[in-house]
Image 1 (cartoon, helix red, strand yellow):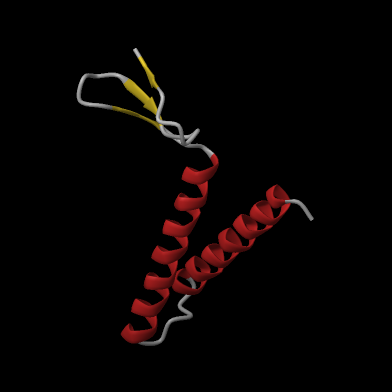
Image 2: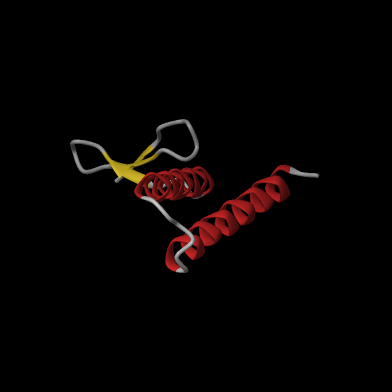
Length: 81
């Protein structure tokens, strides 16, 4: 199994878990505040993980102090004007 397949399956599993947490909260599957806080914390952690995976797959470009665009995705730190 190649890396992209593993990443894709991991994202799908995380998204399904996030959906399950949302369903549990919305359908009244939470009977106390401690469980609610735990599920909200899990959902937050999953969202952060999905965002980190997305950022790694689609690196963004940043600007340095002079306004030059720095391509941080290739690891070389090349600048473009």
